Length: 469
Image (cartoon, rainbow, N blue to C red; front, side, top):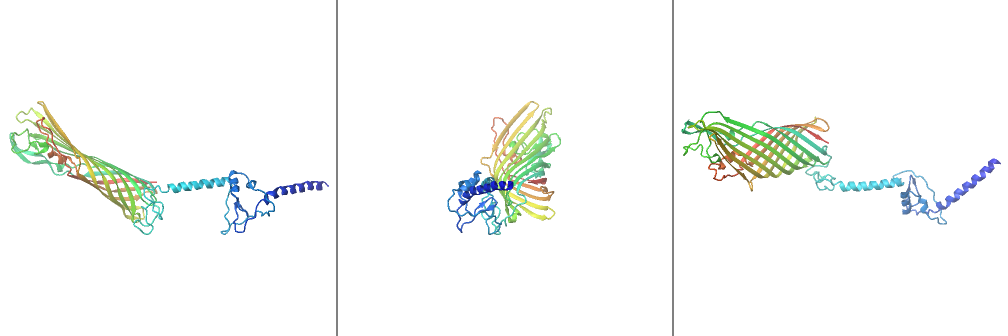
């Protein structure tokens, strides 16, 4: 009897629970045969899901709370179905999962909006790299691919440089005979004898490359100081300044009144190079060659100083010095185009690269010339002039390079090569000397001109490291 007494209440409770569940379950309407089952949790329902049910899932409430219990409805129970290609895909519709899907959708939209960050227009069917990549049909740049150097690349090179000599221009001549009956002899110092010592320089480059190998580049170069020096040993009353320099009559034969001859001469020529450029690099022919186009600023400064000592032949106690100082600054602004190509490559990670660039430039040049002398009498005199080119003549800049590259690791390369720079139509001090008039008396105005007919070649070797990430 005790067991029977316990079984009766349990049966009553089970019947009550069934009665409570029967009403909500009966509220499910039978679906038409052409409707697909809806997805709930990890089970597949035979009934369609209403918008209210989905919203209740997102809010965390029970989906059954939104159903109204109709009468005479046959209940279709839930059944678990195995996944198959022809079956509905199971989906997690919990509130946390729905929120995660919403966030993922927003992230995809953001990614789609920012995918065209490239500085080149979209290539359409190619990919998101831009039309610098390819045409995907065997076009000029070949087929699309992911560049092994996509990202940032930095280079640092040490340069050993030397420059060519200035053009020919007589600076000092010899004197034959004894004062005051001397005549002009041969040229003893010419401008083309000023050979500069090698100079040190640096080159720093930064590249930003996309997945198709197209990149933006900025490069800065500094080279200096180039220095040349020539002198004439002391020989009393043996030299004269070349005719026409700064408009003086020294060296004219025969002079109306021959000035004191010179006894010693010193000359110094210095130069300095700076360059800053911004380029776009577009891959061609499968990425083996890069087409370069961009803007460049280049500055070349050069200064010539000539210093001499003299004495009065009639009164040797009276001595003096002359100083000739000419400085030229060339600021070149212009565009350039060129190619950077991989010429040879070996499986060991060694390759040879070739570079050529050229462009037309506007030369905002200026030259400043000054002359002064002083004697122990005492007496001194100074006159100067500064002339700029407005407008200045056009100039030309060309650059070539040949570099060997050896891979040191996944992120570093060793670079050794040749560097050459050609400048044309620039102002140089030697060319200015005969175009200025800085003679006495002091009351006469100084006159002068700017000459931009000079040219120069700077070349050297480079040694550096390249890192990419």
